Image 1 (cartoon, helix red, strand yellow):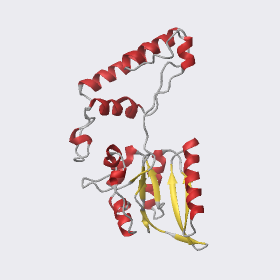
Image 2 (cartoon, helix red, strand yellow):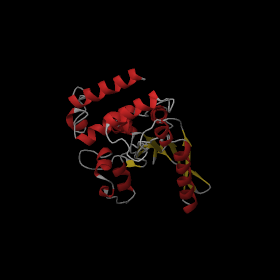
Image 3 (cartoon, rainbow, N blue to C red):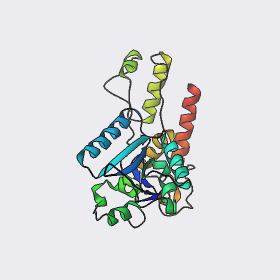
Image 4 (cartoon, one colour):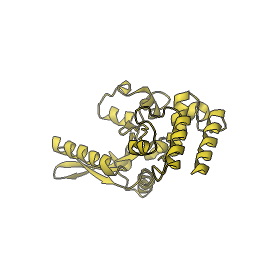
Length: 249
């Protein structure tokens, strides 16, 4: 692998090689891998790398936590420009299109696997996953690794303190808002509701559930000239509701 290629990976994907020559140490080919997962997930990545290194004697992966998703992506690009990129980088979903359009900076996964004589059936992955990381011909450009799913966590202690049912839980946004209002009114929790990655959680998930495009051009898959569809009634309604909830505290 040439040191000038990056192998991509995103929150769910491993980036296609930044062309970078591998270094041999103690008879092993050294592979530099940058990732952006901290906490428990970062520990799982470290365990995976350790298991791989211990399972064979030809290669050694040197895994390095390089900060947030954005820091990994921008750092890998900067390193490529300086001629010292990692062989593999984990790039989050939002950066997928950026890396796919990076031209000579990356090596598409399907090319790398072909050169190594490895066959990978993309259908092993869920359609929604493989579609995100494939080109228009259905070829895997990057490798799914840590694809995320949105999960709603409910503080049952706060629900009980607010006099809310701990068995019949909210199923709609209206019910969530009503529960948050009750929690605030009773001081059952300091913060009635919060979220991480609001665009992904509050809009992309809704877009998928209601089958309403978040952008034109099949959400950008059919061309780089796609435009956001946030003016659609469902997104306008969601935005107004979130703004009202913010004003309510």
